Image 1 (tube, rainbow, N blue to C red):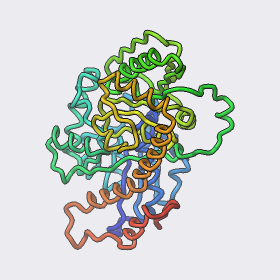
Image 2 (cartoon, one colour; image 1 turned 180 degrees about the vertical axis):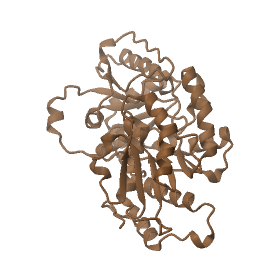
Image 3 (cartoon, one colour; image 1 turned 90 degrees about the vertical axis):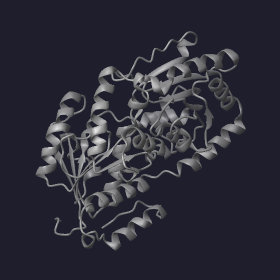
Image 4 (cartoon, rainbow, N blue to C red; image 1 turned 180 degrees about the horizontal axis):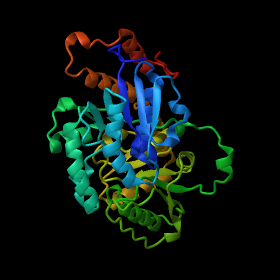
Length: 409
């Protein structure tokens, strides 16, 4: 397979995200790449990543080459230098047509055609939520990346509008690609090993990093109000996620029920699925989100959701969640109480949640991203060179209507 066929694109993938902990952005980038490779047998993919990715089955296709180099989990400074200086050299060496960076950061000095995904501009909209070093670096780097990239993708209209407003980008250079939910959260089968070890049966669940914009302080206060007003409720509060020095101080002050507020830290995907499945309700009172995966993951798992009316959340959850003002602690406590005590409401939210989560598909996201690859690749070419295989596009159109995983040959 070579570039004699103008329809074949050599796509380089910035795989730094594969060497990071799989939180929301990294999980989304992984699912997007995995789905792109599942549906696209026409173009060539070069995944620039660590050696641990070399024999992963999800990349084992004839049109995919994993290029291993010196990045690894936990080596953040080393990985940053790799991304800025080694990655552009690799992309040039392998003569990629388009370099795709799907997880916020890309090489600043790359001169070829590129696509960068920018999750949100929270560090611009609310800089007080971040450490001085983090917001200074991001305010220096991200605007330059956005203006230099051939295309910028983002995952909600809210984030797209922020990019247009704060970076003064032309609307034609910013594309919306909605995220979706990992298949693992739709899995409702019994998992005996996990179930045998399961001892927590009645709890409110929060999933996400422990940072100021996630509004954990208000959630803990609302939980205390809930318990004070409802002595019969013994429901615990479990917080899954970790703190980071990149973010400002969360300053959690738990007064009462300290024994019932459980900080779980990071868990793997299988255990996260079990936490969702056994939760009484998922609370996600975030102040600002680029997309907000946990509410959709909860809906896929069959759990009711209470979340915010702010930023992208109404766009993501539709009418399938109880929506609250995240600054109003009494409203949050009242909504949690309502879900815990009203079985009919619980069933209705679960039903709506199943319908809402179906609106988001990784196949749809991959199809849109593939379209963007062609747009960028063909940019500046003569009209006669912009032909895309009709056969390929006909197959792409079928993706959303097919229940089985599509294969393009």
